[in-house]
Length: 335
Image (cartoon, rainbow, N blue to C red; front, side):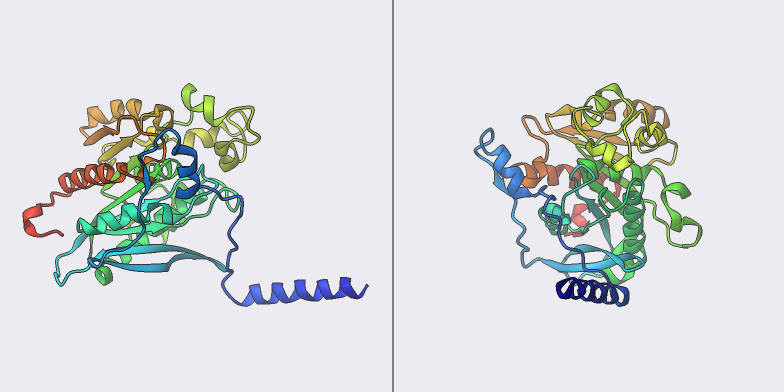
């Protein structure tokens, strides 16, 4: 009885503490999508790879754990990487959304990519978002749009050109980034759109090995696999395709192509099932003259962006694409 009363007291104390301060979330031990774990899976087939370094060079300024949005006591954070320079020139911004099947992963998975972008003169952010175990679709889209809005509202403080912001992501993060980018102004995906004067639109999308169409037969073969209970997509949508058909359709970027769709880079691995739908999406973009590019890194596994030597190639492709879309002249000392 004494032990029972002590447990109740401890529980009440925890509730009281949680009620008066921001909740500190404990890392989920089931969240295993890290570069280290992925490396152990891949090293046998790709013995030449190394985990991309998260070290920050002297030319880049790192600002960690910045809160970009709050939901009650829940704070979502991002890390920011800026070029160290005395130049007053405004710089383009890019926000990275990590992958992990909508259920796992960490923003630090994109730290090496973000650091490299900062070295090329971009202001880069890596964001955390609510995973499917915490909040179902479309919460992650709300979070991504909130991060864009935060970066644009903070543009003057961090030297960002508010008219030149891109969103990028890998795997599930690629799908999230793409859907975020193609749904500008749609309240269903952006609850703040009616109350905020700050736009959450982006000027370019980088979809790295992410789905463009959940409803295609090829995507459903893997994302709606009956052997998985639930599948990653099913867990995010709160049900299988037959149960939540509308969600599977709504979350497919392919269905939002219009004349205002931003330029899109599809950066894909040799594992084509992860980028299903991008070819069909491009066919919708062509008549509208929306700029696009498809770059495939041959011989690569999924999650290639976590490793060298592929990271260098991926960064070069992204920088070249964004420089072109943003009309950046390297001779003007962007770095």
